[in-house]
Length: 267
Image (cartoon, rainbow, N blue to C red):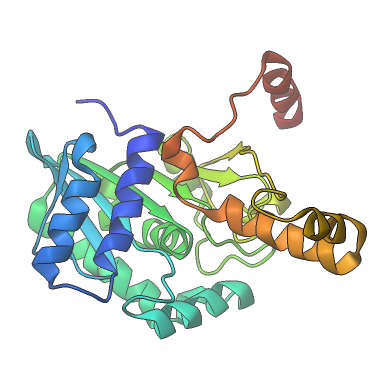
């Protein structure tokens, strides 16, 4: 069985937000999540799923497990704790916040109980950060990990947030972990300084139309005043941060010249 694509991984990561909704029983939210990710072939494992973490098993192979840590949801369950954890990333002290260790413990428990032969992970925003923390600090996860993808994960430009690993572990994770980022996303901007804890950084571009559904006057104002340009930049950042870009086909295809340019930059 092949590894989940970037698109399927993003869809499964988005499914974890369904589990974080305030409304509905757990069974209602599981049904909603299963409907959302149906095309991936994965279904929610009830025992190891809550409003913070979603564990999936493939319907054709229960030993193929996918775990997603939910990102910030300020209108959902655990909103205050999410905000505190986000502040922890900003200050470089993420590892001292309870949410990070709890996500690691719950991930470890799911792995120990299910003993997967294939383990994949995929998480967005704050969830990408707790996922990276878990991979960095859990031998159990690294032992079983087949592949992991983060999407616009929260990143500090200079501080490690307790995610630094030894050179040996970094080499072990080099081809297993991918950090996907949309250009102009402010939350994952810390990666641009080279502060990637392990794995590979992959950057993407999506189109943004700041004039859509706005009056002529509003467009002129936003393009000719410092206040307007600042507002437009904020809107662009919010737009870039969305998880749906990674599975909706919104990512712009790279031309040959851009691919060559990226190779030169990497060299």
